[in-house]
Amino acid sequence: MKQTNSAILHHKYSLEDGHVTPQINGIDGYRGVMMTRKSKEKRLHSPFSNVLSVDAIKQNPDLLKQSNVVGIHIHHGSLAPKFLFLKEKYGLPMFVGFRGNDATAYPKKKQNLLKLKKLFRSADMFFPVCEHLKRKIIKLGCPEDKIRVLYGGVDLDRFKSRSRKVSGKEKIRFLAIGRFVEKKGFGDLIRAFADVKKRHSNIKLTLVGQGPSEAEYRKLIKKLQLGSSVQIIPWVNYRKIQDKYYRSHVFCAPSCTSKDGNQEGIPNTLKEAMATGMPVISTTHAGIPELVKNKISGLLVPERSVNQLAKAMNWLINNPKSWAKLGENARKKVESDFNMALQLKKQKKYYDEILKHK
Image (cartoon, rainbow, N blue to C red; front, side, top):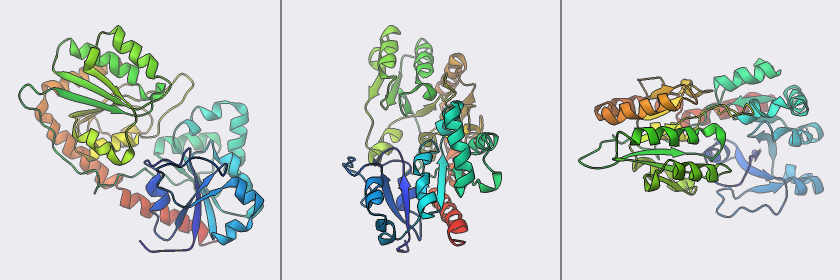
């Protein structure tokens, strides 16, 4: 990668490694510097070595020039209003991502909508992660000419494609990965799995993640007497997550709109699973149909339909010969539209569009 002194300040929810890391450390021509709210935020095992705090910037604004900061990229629209002062006070161009909640549930509160409307007037460019969220923020008042859809990309060298097969008495392993929150739909998945298990005893479900709904899921597993056929394991180090994909046969992402209106963009775990050649089951929710075409690159069911979710799981169990073609088409879709190398080039192009004029 070409080295440069030009730096972009980035801010997201944490300094942990994850899907957003390449969008910070991997943009040709721009050095990524993470920005924290306070100077003492923890960053154990963080992939980000360059870190500046807002506290330090306020105390010594010359740090911006010393680090040759040429712009700011806030990766969640709901976090961006707190950093508008960097544009207003220091004239730094501002890029803002929209990933789901920030374009759906967050604006439902009047004070939040007012903050977003100010943001739409002031910031330079907006990066919704799918066309669905683009339409959402246009309705909220974002000027369309400031919007560039920027899909989250998948590292195709890291997530290699492997055909899934099942042999003999081997259990068919279903996998779901994500935060344990309502919009991930894992409660529906557990119920559907319980229904499927009445017909097929040789199946297993693994849920990887953590979050506020964990106690609810454990109670549900106990109530449905699923025992060890459903396994909950803590969040896995992102550098090791691909092992979970390769050890599984079918990936499930039953996303749904939560009671407060919170929606996904497109789950990154779904893209990664597809990149590994795994057949997937998901829902006609938010931007997911931009990724998964029903019965071609995966199976799509209506959100919150436990019955249809169970039917899709049963169909894949009964039709293992379909797995290879579904997985092959899934990989091709990720290669063509969700390739990380392609998305990072687009991100650089969008930065250049604003920064070269400045």
